[in-house]
Length: 595
Image (cartoon, rainbow, N blue to C red; front, side, top):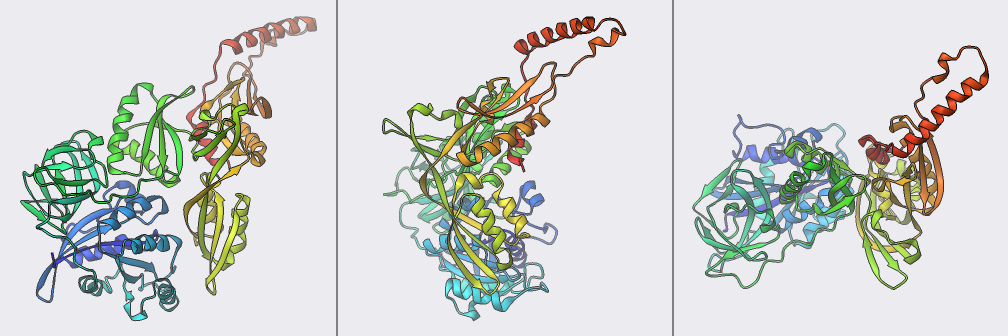
């Protein structure tokens, strides 16, 4: 165990941690020159296309230092705020962390929040200044920021470059010297923490674990503590570039177990595995239960695919424990699922993965957040969906979630960023100048306001320089109303939203105009209305497609033309009673992109 080091890499998105991980793998000879490629650990096509890490990936490296062989277990983590749950799980399985800061951009909001996660778990922090080969690197000012943040000495900061490989040997040496070897004992009963799992259509579910105490051998009879299910360890091994089978693994090791589990609800991330004969006294504290921020309905385009979609969701949940879902039905869309996501990027990634990995075509409804509804009987109801809102006559007041947001930006963009936050009903709480030209703004914002397009707008007004991090702080009373969209007096539940009273009129007007463009013309007039309760606040009309019935009347009396037009009018009226309006999928997505 003295020869094992478990560490993870934490950084803000796009600070070069995947590139640096590639260099570490090459330096330790884990990856041959032939297998080497960009972003080795990112095995999803999506990750390569977008250039971001979505899943944390574990890999074992062997490194010889001063004639001693060491085993290094690296867990690469995502940098985006929507995947911070992945980061928290990786940190729970490690003793040390590389804190990577981009020498051209300095410390960003997500760097700080990931660092706090690591410090809460008492990890040993190794600061690394990456991208030192860039012409616009500012090592001196960024080093000052790092010293201010973690209170280390300037000499402790390793200068490195993921592109050229500078500083990589120094990083490996520092990991061996500074990161403590795992605590735990091989004599104690077996205790293993599951920190991830994947579904393999041939082998069943593969669980990734970190052994805290004890020894596991191939064929052992093991028990999952939380689910109380028992299995035989058919195969155990370590995570190299490809999984490598082993006969036994000891305390401090990170590895995988295959035991022929078919049902996805039998493996829970954060669960403890122990022996059936000699069980451990208590389960390891798993990870905090994930709290979804954004809720949306996911429905199959073809109603017959409902069961397939359920299977796909179960398999996805194995690989992404932060996804939560429950069945629901909608008048307009039929049967589907109400899903909870950590943010809009998370929602987009899940939709994309359903399409690519499981070939599922889905419609996603308008995303919204959860509200606490207080009725006049004194009950509190949690509502994730506007359709679940009680009748207005039973309502006392509604509370909405607020977030504490930290935005770090260049001081040139302070004005526009403040303007954006104030437009979204934000309150400025604090403003701190980190350096002469970098400022940290702290705002209290309603979560419902940032769900749509806040992140994109923030990036565009700050030319990509602002970084954003947030956590939910509390619930506050708000003047919210339910805005319904009616087509020919029929409410379309998939388009209804809960919205602040001050924004309702403007939003309703934009919605009706947008739907007028997107819904194809029919043989009859279609009235599109936005309503709050019984009050209509905006309306657009899609005119009917008309045939020129008077073409055959040339000359003659006007009454003959009128007679034909009246006849057509009656037919249109009858058609309106039997015809129904088909809403194309574009219309459901249009709500997200109203600007």
